[in-house]
Image 1 (cartoon, one colour):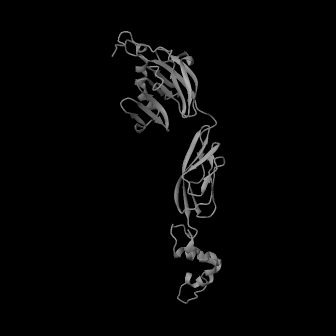
Image 2 (tube, helix red, strand yellow):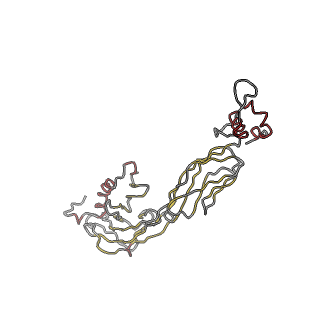
Image 3 (tube, one colour):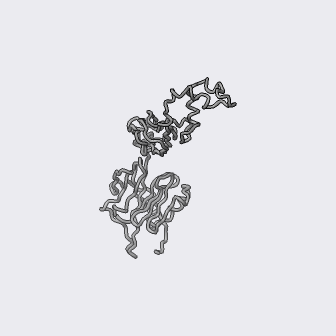
Length: 295
């Protein structure tokens, strides 16, 4: 290790690598959200990348002002890249001095590229990485990036109920709703016979199969995608009490529905009970055997 006589002489890469763990602590990132596999360290907060270190680049978000402090050790654009979170943009790129303080615009030295997951920043190949002439060690070159999140257009949040029921071979509809101005919708894992409108979020159709499905519903806009799981249960037309079985209880319920307020008003067979036996003769025609033939 070189014998540095002042803080300004310490290599930029050594300055930053020593503060990153402390910044992660100050950002209240739990240990379970930090990982190190021997070559790459990274941490995340609320599902968003906070700090990253490999042999080509290291960067971290300042715990107080949110700016990205970065050091490039090579011009390798494959592994030496800063990855922003979805929706973030770069508003300023500054060089740093020996105290890691901003000294001037450096936007001409870095390239910002749009990708499907967010912007990536790489060091231009024309930039020279400082080397310690006394020992050949890479010093690294430091930058401070100011980033801004997409404002006024956060990712949607699902607000519709996360459970729904339907009846086999009968029309069904469910409306996906979400906050923050969704512009498109999707639903994956729908039962046979149902589909979703990507423009309105309406799930509709005629389900053909009895059972319970876990449907991944989502709503998206320019700020991102909100995802939730809808529990969708489709029951037989004869399963009136929704217990996933068809039995005499359902028949009794159907009898009661058929007779309305007059159900079981008389103990016709004089057995001391008012039950389905008493009214079966009056409703056979109305039932039409559907509990024997229903899905």
